[in-house]
Length: 332
Image (tube, rainbow, N blue to C red; front, side, top):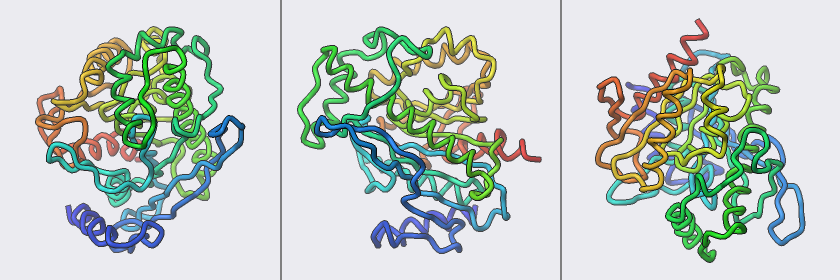
């Protein structure tokens, strides 16, 4: 528990300086390297296609042995429109939401080399190679995206000065392009991490992924719909994926899944909770469902987590126990 307490202290101290100078002292259990380029993605912000660098921040444990460490990729939320690797603390309904940095500090201080990704967002007009109906994806986007879900995306757009979305095919395509570009980028990051495993000093056979909201949807999509080297995934309040449920249920190589939703989560997200849970229970995946009582869509990692096995611990402790069992214990 001392390491976790020091990680919290590091958050307080480093919040007073600029992100570029906020590299933690190794006393707090990790060092961080920012703006590591893991690939490039296509965008057309003004209608002209170009490539832009995709970056991540890398948190390396300093008090948990010498490696190779199990690796965890963390993906931020933001309705596929906003957010990033280093966000100010977000508050809603009296709750302080844990940022990507908070999660990375917690994970790295406990012996997981952690990679916090940026990915292409809707305002950039990202270009994805995914096509509806191909690669086991859905043809009918309206089977997943409801009108009230589009209203949620519109709230996110309003926060950055963009007009709301309707329910037209063109508006649905905006969400498809942003969501699936995020899936592409996360998969690209995994490829980079595996290819550079030796220099990163990570174990390429023990990699996990997690994220909240849009980042949880990307996590679930990569874990369930793509052939990637993931051993564990912890999506937090994710939307549903655009991959066919029959394909997912039929897979024999799914990673272990720990999935959480909150009591007062957004209505479309709670509808997806039921669909995703039923699908995973029908599959061969090792699946645990967690519940965050008393919180809305945003919550800290020290919020209480109730699991389907009847246990009650903090969300952060449950995620750490899950990753330890799936990634660290497999190294022994």
